[in-house]
Image 1: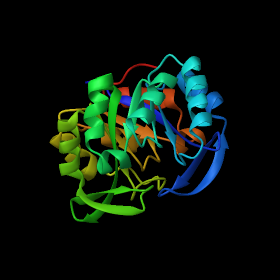
Image 2 (image 1 turned 60 degrees about the vertical axis):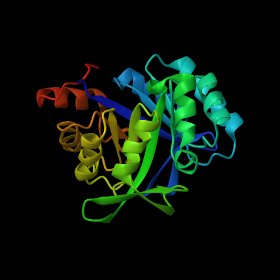
Image 3 (image 1 turned 180 degrees about the horizontal axis):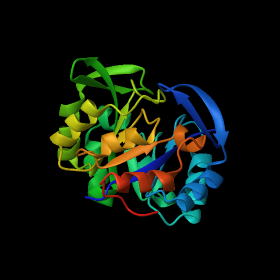
Image 4 (image 1 turned 30 degrees about the vertical axis):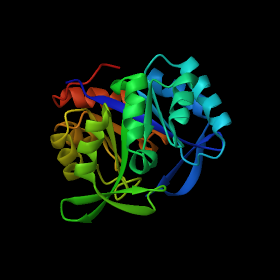
Length: 249
């Protein structure tokens, strides 16, 4: 299966921001400008996350502006608390909608979305944190609250409920740039039949190769692309040279 490279834009107050371990957010850039740059560089898809959920009207306007500027798929998450939120996000231009906390508090939402949009448009986003060796719990409220849910079991349940993809966010690795959490991503990828997107920890080209050489289908990253430490086109060439099937830029 062809692997994907997915830049992520965390949006707050109409701007792209980035932090570490879900905290200390710093301003980065204008989202539409950055989105265009990433498609030109060869990104396979773009993920847009509303990290505050406070001004949905403005955020959905940005979704529409980005969708009008891109030809690659656009996935959108953050601030999805109900079916009407998901529907509004699709109507604004999202190709896929990701849900995190709302899927845990109301699992039937995944099924409702799948019945309305199809499973390929429904992404279960899981914020995972290590609690013991080879054991992770799903967190909500921006990584602040432990739900007690085992990540592997929750991923399986989410797929049963209709999710067509898993976005797996490692809280432990987020923004640290020491590599993706391979054990976590492979454990989930081996447990489900849908694609898994690894998120959190990218710092070098080798980190992408490490996570994509297994069953994990896609690698999402933010700061290494935002600050220019990794060029997407060169990254994809590197991955091809290391026998990882990837779409050419």
